[in-house]
Image (cartoon, rainbow, N blue to C red; front, side, top):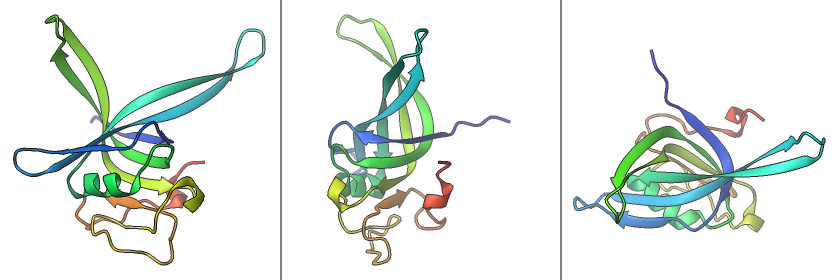
Length: 151
């Protein structure tokens, strides 16, 4: 048995950039920063920021483009994927990205959140005016709730 599951909570480093494949499927790319605080050998608090490349496909890519903005606090659930490519000098390079299967905007309207859109339907939810959620399940499975976040 193997598992490839990633859960991140962080802030967008830039607005999503959306393109369309030859077949017309949307794909959005953006980066998310996560912070870790730790104490160094001298007992002083240090902060390390990790940047994660995020890829979102289909209808949820369109939702990401519409609702996510630089600085937005977001919950991402997905899988890590390795990508190999050649640079301009012909050298083989490897990078890793998170292919998001679900995402949920966290925080309030003051952080740039618009009226909520749930699942892949884009329907408004009056009960959750400051949350945007999307999943790639076609609406067949419920999206995550705040209770699913482990902290």
